[in-house]
Image (cartoon, helix red, strand yellow):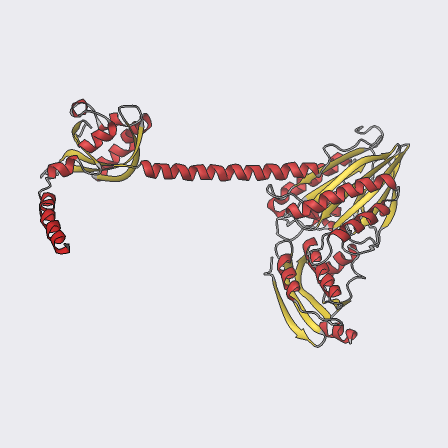
Amino acid sequence: MTSPFSTSTDPAATGPLLTVRGELDVATAPRLRARIAELTLTAGQLLVVDLAGVTFCDSSGISALIAARNVAEAAKAKVALVAVPARLIRTLALTGLADFFPTYPTAEEAISAHD
Amino acid sequence: MMAEADAGGRENADPAFSALLEDSAEDLYENAPCGYLSTLLDGTIAKINTTLLGWLGHERDEIVGRRRFSDLLTVGGRLYHETHFAPLLRMQGELGGVAFEMKTASGARLPVLVTSTVKTGSGGEAQLIRTTVFDASDRRAYEQELLRARDHAERERDRVQRLARTLQQTLLPPTLAEVPGMQVAAYYHPASADQVGGDFYDLFPVTGDTWGFFLGDVSGKGAAAAVVTSLARYTLRASAVHDPDPTVALGILNTVLNQQFHGTDPRYCTVIHGRIRPHGDSATVTLAGGGHPPALLIRADGTATFLPIPGGQLVGALPGARFTAVDVRLEPGDTVLLYTDGLTEARTHGRTRYSEEQLRADLTGSASTTAPTVIEAVTDLLAGFGDGVEDDTALLAFSIPLPGGDQP
């Protein structure tokens, strides 16, 4: 079953918390990329991307996550992925990106690790 | 001056106005802005107005009492009149807005809209048929313009599809190189006829005893992806000539892509790039991986295993990405299959997505597998998924035939 795609942004102590839900594919990834482009990140902040609700992620979705990392790097900020679904963990391992994106079970853990 | 002019105007207007009132029914009938005709029940024209005669270029005495209404129509119109119009009119007593073409005396065709009513006597019996005829040339011209616009749009779509197909073909090898003692086969399944896909593969001679191959998948679709696809394809092909180590070619491609597409619109590809060195009746295959789903090795005994290449990263996404390689020895009866995730992420009939594990299970146990038979089997799988295959799919396989089996 396909689930509707949505994103939302909430402020956290260390920077924006971006929550992604639904299928992240060629049709929906541009919306995530647009959301990422709107983020305001300052040096030293942490962009937390919550992927708990992501039911599918293909190469376009991976592109959007890399874009998030590039945006963070350009702002001298960091990025962390939290609650990454098992299938996406496998994709990140396969694509050699596991070391490249710090991952945490929860947003709280990502935030306290950043402090 | 003004008052005089007004008074004069009024004096002139009065006779014009009374002329309007005195307009005879006869004149209205003859010179109405539409054609009128009355026919007997057998279709013979009993009365026709000047307007319609003018449109058709006929004299009144050629028509009245001599011709039937259907005689004035084109052959197709006459058939339609006899088989549909006249029976319906008899049944309903009136029928309106039906399009016909009339023949003029000069042989030209006049598109018209025809409305008819049946005049009945006091006892309800049909007496004659009254028909009005409207000139529909403008409307027909408009319809033809619409048809022309539709034809144009269809031609344009065909042209786009032809362009996409041509571009696609330039991104794929017209034929695969022959490797002595081996069988090779490939297949490309485009997900859309309008868009160039982002998958690519090739198999080509490198030196006298070594062949190179690659199969990859560029992120994204369409023209933007095609730019990366052709860059990837030609960079790998050129790099392969200079260094025997396939991880070096992946490193060069990574640098090229990362320099060109950094920032908020990163482009990358996943790819397996490798070498085949045949010797005797076996071959050594080196596979270097850049974040691509693992190749499948189907042994002569029907067991199927993945060939993971741990540690390889996406090509183009990160500066200084790492690439690793593994070696595998192929014996007679062994087949290697490379594929893109258009296959493993296709939606199956239950709409759940297919997977690498299911692919392995589906290709396990088929004895006497060869490159052509495995490509055929997977092509059948794809055909079975139908529109569940949402992304382009590329397949490349090579095998060493069993002695006495099908020779390449």
